[in-house]
Length: 147
Image (cartoon, rainbow, N blue to C red; front, side, top):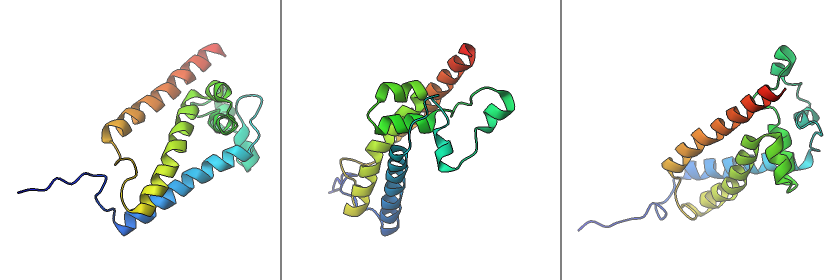
């Protein structure tokens, strides 16, 4: 007689638990950092407050790159300004939402040693890996055609 064990109750290895907690903390730190940054009124350039250089793509081509506005988007998101977040970079808004959901899930799962709510979904991860870049590229093309 075989026993059915749900993926939620399967124990996670010690190494994976550490990686889950560390990964969740890194994502939380990125969100917190974005929350301390003042969103750039231009819709991009917020990353400069971290001592990072201006976008090389803008310097070379005079046009924004697909990632331009990501940090500004996260900064607006952390202030609850979701429309401004989407305006700065809709892919950034999507990533911020994913990060906000994933961080506690990773940390709690790592601490508990079993998946909190449920295990990762390959189907969902694949969909997000397609949708987020697609949205980012579409907004980039629209932005390029508008400038």
